[in-house]
Image: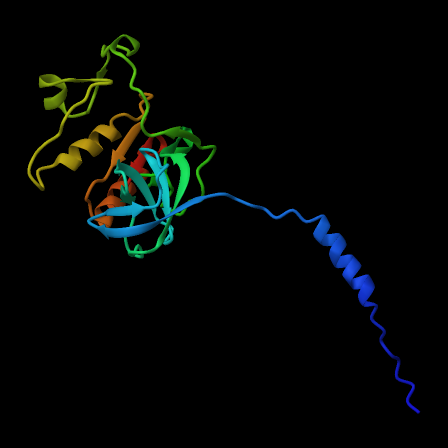
Length: 231
């Protein structure tokens, strides 16, 4: 006769243990409002099913892309896709985040290359101590602004002598392609070294190789210490 031990299972004890664990279990529930993509094209996605969305609210697509709710109609929303529209298709779910568009600010952005949402794209890791700030805020009134009283030297003698620029002043650089607009901007940034001026270089419609060359120039000459590049 075999001496093989017999395994005895007490189903009552197992059921009691399961019941005890279930009684102490609280599921993590998260409420969210989900709509659907009606159509997408030219960087704009039309979304339905989000009646409570606010202007400038950030929407999250199934592809991971972020949209900005701008045109609010009675039955749909026109959202600007902030990023690549690849992967966004008709019928996909869209989640309302409840967050108004904000971007990180602070000294941690200096020396970094970021996208328009302030997310680093230079492979140097996350930003240091970012402070979120809404994109759309009320601009200070005229009386609350400091007057333009201090010149900003560009380092280009013809500009500094004939049409000097003040700190805080807006100045448009306009011209045909390949006429040196980018060179003027980069030379001005390089000339601010040691003058307690932070610079933001925004590359609009430029090739990745051109941006990489500009960043390399700024890094080589130590200008990235006080500069943020947005691509």
